[in-house]
Image (tube, rainbow, N blue to C red):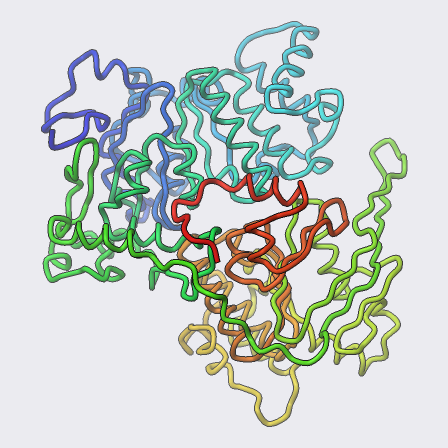
Length: 626
């Protein structure tokens, strides 16, 4: 075979009739373009049988989501698709909108990354499920109520506890379970899951992934799973298709792609995953960014970022061809570099001792017995009390990096808000460089300005933290003006250079930057005032794996260059391993374990820490422990 059977053809011929009939979904030559003519997805071919899981992986801009949305014909108004899509033998591209509506939510369902945007804030959980069940057939009220309870229990939720609640009253993991229950209510044959676990804590992610696998086994359901997390893809997918600049560049069984990538881009994604098992002194990443599909239409789309690129890669667009049994690759140099690709996998850096910034005398931040309680009113008017922090004590030394780990609701963000003065502890002491910051409102103006300069923050979503109306230069100039004026203040261009951005970006606005470039800008703004403590609140959670590695290396450089202390808030334990000296584990507002990062990850003592570590998808780069 020169083309794998799953693609719907053998040696360019149609599959036998019985093989084609076994396919639930078949896509041929799918191309997606904007109405202005810009190509977003080019010539995608795929096939999927009942019970199989196909992974789509690649950086933002690769075309994963556009491909998935094309399958159910829910593209934006300014985007059109061409090609053939067969589902259970019916040609979807020839169907009327009315016929497609009968398929969506019944035979084909979709669950998105952010369940909050997918759920109606004015509907209870029970109403969401009732609406989904209505599409799959008529039931009387009693039968519908019983079915709602069954569907909620199926995804691990107690109907009595959640059916009457609204989305905002649920945690992120619970909302994702509700969205999943609604998507599965009509027993679809195909579920399209678009980054469904990206924003979830590690334990919740593990629960949702296990739930998906169990439901798939029980129902014989097919699934297309979109993710930029290769550990997740390898843990749940049978096959993985790697997308880049709108095209498939590699297609292989998940286990084989993990062990032996057959395209330089696939290798780059693999190497960019930070290992959780050991520290490495230099995180790997792919330089540059994903180009527009049309700009690389006549050449290898990855050539500009590839270390193996040759002249032939610049003048010829590679086809997706056989690269072994059941495998395909779009690399014209594969025969020449295959052994080198494998050598790069086998010779990845093993454990190295963390390079520690010189720690200054004494503690920069001291927290003693912090408590914080929030009081809210429910829809019934009853007061509800939530204990966010309970007797929390810790210190951060000058130049030290400390990780703050825990699930949603554990109190991590409340700690950060108290340090930043966005919230005040009910009791306890908090001091920063000798300044009592327990109650910011009690500080004099000079002391308040001093405290604000001492601590800065980098948030998870850089776009939301940057003023979209201001140019990057204006935002950075504002930050520089707030910093110390001691004759060493850098210029905007110098600040941009520090974070790896060209000076020309000063004239751009946030919307014109990629996610990684916006996060670099946010870091530049934070270090403009030369803070002694930088709080990093999930700064790489929403970024592609290669961009994530670049940002982590940048933060390492900031720490080493300026002796900046870091408080690193994250639910990703591989990031904790790579970025911190010590770690604190929070659960229900209490520190349940703390200690040196390597010792705690290698030999956890508290049952909750053990559960967090056991929830991590298997590390394809497991190796010697630091």
